[in-house]
Image (cartoon, rainbow, N blue to C red; front, side, top):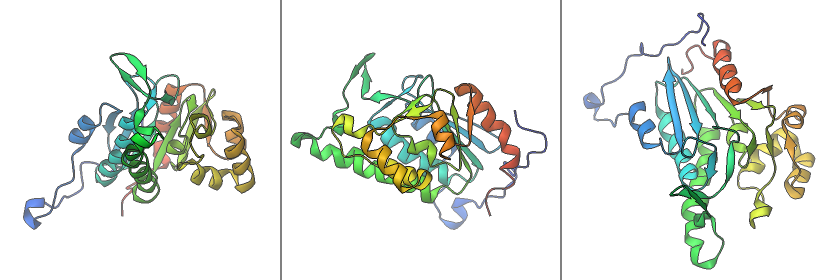
Length: 250
């Protein structure tokens, strides 16, 4: 619930008609929320955009849909002048269920992340290109305050840790998973871990697969608050907005 003193210029801002200057209009919320509904469930109220990563309405399976979907989400939602705050988090018990895909209700490996020579071209298309744009888009391009919701187990914890404010559930945990799937550790995670943990703690966690729990993340300054469960995280995010917004864009 948003407090009564929350200020917003949502719906009041004058807009330059694209046809007047021959410019390309921003993609409207209704359009990009529909395009990305396979990996992000979105709702918006008074300029506050809530986006929950998911796979078939449950915890997210990390793979090409989310990897690419985040890239476009940061681009389209970040350019939308009607978004004044973005809340980004997970769905269900865990932020990330695993690396793979659901096909006809059954789990199968995500071959787009395979390191075999025959599949190497997919590594660029779905890992390097989209992944690089995910990180650069979230760090450099989002011009509004962001709140991350980290629920349960997280593979790419950088997605929520890169937000300005991060809330997590009591059972939140993460670890460097790349060694476990035959990859070099890092893949963007190291950027925010190193910033938040400090170089020495980061190197240990990155290279040993240390389990980072919610309490440890709070003690290390990686998160701001711990909530009992995912829904209480989202409720807390909405309650905090009175101190965050007031028009967000210059």
